[in-house]
Image (cartoon, rainbow, N blue to C red; front, side, top):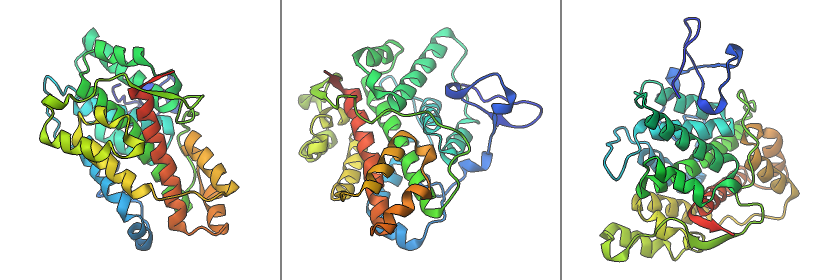
Length: 328
């Protein structure tokens, strides 16, 4: 997944959307890496809106730093490098087609040293990329074999939990950025995304039996025990919290987001259902044409944002359930 340069100009493309046509290669935007707000990517939003969304924005911003720290030490149990993390993030951003997000993660990824050129390293990165693309776009194909393939290329249990959180989070971030761009009336897309399947399996049926092993209570740290006791009580996290608890800091922030968004009860509005449907399947096409009818129907801008963001968060949790639990 190296960034390639043509005709003396900086360009990038990623393995998930590559071809040999130079006209399709998009320019690298190095300045996109330099943002103060790593979640909303410095969108110029009204202060009133930011204040009304502050409850869930705080843990969302913290997740950016947890998932993509400035330094990422690699150990025997935690093998995902900064390159692995950002490469996966870019894969999902491209799948969603939200250009601002693609620019950001491509610019962060570009200066990093990639893996060595061995066949094993290439296979490992290809497997991670394929898994990220499939869980983001076609979660119905994710099964125990898909997780087994990650294990075969050397990902540990901690890595598996982390990569699933990264994929779910970037899909959430892409849809959130798309919603705020729609509020501001920005143009829809520069880079077409993929058609994305619904967040759950087609029959909406995921069993409660985890594929990945849960944290063993007798070996759990104090942080893991505290996190598990707190978040397993939440119905939306009940099945997956024992597995997510391998990374308790991430579980705490995911739970904090849930706590801030769970009170958003959607009204029975056809315009809202249509907006959620498009945001779910094609975030790259979401625009003011879907957002404005919500405020015209009587919702405040903040309520409309929170309801749409809640639908994006539900997609994140559903993908975690698909990845962690057996599909019947």
